[in-house]
Length: 195
Image (cartoon, rainbow, N blue to C red; front, side):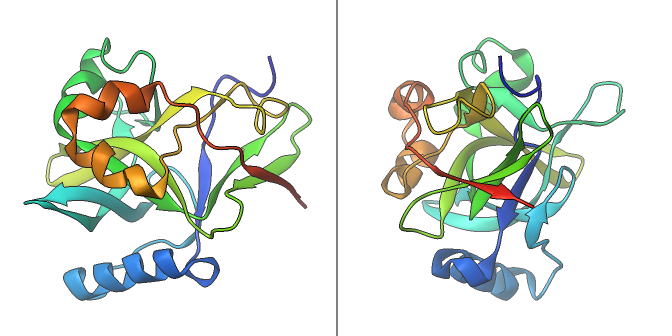
């Protein structure tokens, strides 16, 4: 097994690398009147853009990364796509509150602590499947993970469930497609070592 048991603890949301990310940030700024949104390297508990359904459209909102743990000590940042329906803490979210986490890529470390950046070829955008809930008045999200594909296996045995752009609305709106998307194999990604 490569990598540790935990994964996808950092990702990137950079508007300079993607017109799509710039557009999302502009919509958020207009909607929330300049409320602070983290850009660059994203860490758990950061407040970041997330795409959800609002009425009948996909819309960006601001959400903090990580579901609060039951003991309130720390956060849960990932959920296994294969077992999300079985887990009480994720089942209702999977049925009613699916989201997309927009990014320009994610980071992972191998056993030698070498950091790698994974991104999609030919686009500055990478969309990850997620779930959200409300903790008090604050929206919180987790990233769904799946078995690593060939582009990721050498670094880690898990990876985010990457959703193709054309499937964003399907993931958010279509309850019948949820199982198929949970079982889908993410696209091959470009891996770059980070110094």
